[in-house]
Length: 300
Length: 326
Image (cartoon, rainbow over all chains, first blue to last red; front, side, top):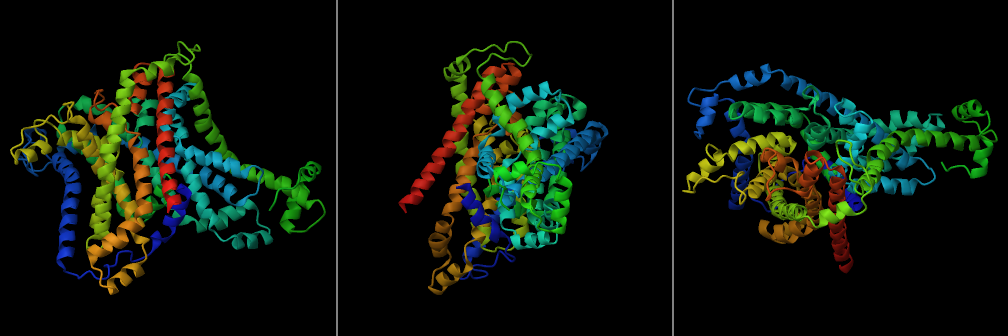
């Protein structure tokens, strides 16, 4: 059932100029003005919590702790919470750990999923159908249900408190194989046949014909895997105990108690951790919006 | 390219590999090319499949199997135990009031969060889809929180829900409402987590609805408009019915996502376990990594797994029955 949905929803999302005014809507009709006001109200409601965090981060600890509902503290705006956080060193290390492991997870997931998806889409082999069915069944397995045996496995492999222990269990994302296979199925086979006649091998064809044609879907999958890896909490929280190997979300979580009631610093941390992803969104807005539609209906 | 028959493949196992490569490159059709080509093709297939399949078996299939085994033992995190205890863990879990409480909390959270996460997302998407100026701003404000780590949103909402100096109580004070100890009070902590969750994850459903709305052919609106249907009429007769399939999927995905509650609930309460918010995943975590009882925790994870599968299959069945009736 998920399959049908993916097929019907993914393709037309690319339509340019996707938001024309609906026919019959007057540009300044009362209904449109009401709609605008409701949207504005909701947008403010959704932005306020984050803006309030930003405002708090730019206050002194005293102003923050006073709880006065003002955007700028009595002592004026200050970046001292940020300098305090950044000078403590670990934040940079955690950001680096997050970046390195997220990139590794994204690269490995994309590589192994694309290769397997191509095999399921194009290569003929015995048992292809049932093997694919097993992989697809993997989509329903909640990763949280596997933490105990996975942790046990990492203990056995001596991978607890290592990058690899963090990375490896996160690279198996059956939904991505499904999404990529769906896409490869739609790539015209004539292009490949022509290359085969010219003597190109399977891998050449995959690398120089199929992959370049799949750039948009690869970008969507990559962005999604990256965001998921960057924000993942439970697994890194379990498998990493060494402070110097923690990712940003886990590291930040451990110091909240250490900071006690230093609200400005806690908010400065939150804002710093949010910045990279807001930047990613601003740069890749189009791909992300499209990626949600494709990967979302493909099984989150 | 079809696989060569069994016999042909057997004859191709000789020292012909070099010749095979050449014959494929030149594209010549010597006798035997097909058979050795089949073997080569088989190797190529496995080269494509192996990396994913090995990882799939190691980090998904094997943990599932090993987890079932663990759930029948008294294995502990510290390495002691490991003896076979039969169904004792399952029997204990199923007669454990805390397990049922966690299950109840999980289901309650799923109901409380799914309703607004679907309805508000629908409202947002329908309004944005009417082409109101400011598209970029709407998308940014509604979707941005979804990109934030659970740690970040937890810290922001703990600050807002602070009983003494938090913004939530400051706003409520304007309406003469007494300060509420949102996260510390057992009557309100679940609602605080739901509010934070709705804020955090609505952007995903919003974008799904937006994508579905863009699939409704513009001609339908044009035709309706020519027939004199106004915006309200269009909404009820075209937009809402056309969104049916998308709504079914969004509800299903949301229910399955809400059942996995852990990150924000755990962090917003600062790791403190509350009887009114402890989810089934959190109980599993506590049994395994706080109580060190891996065997018992594994049993709970299979009860959780079963819950997900049962609800998932139930939803799928209801949906397909409805479709058959039409």
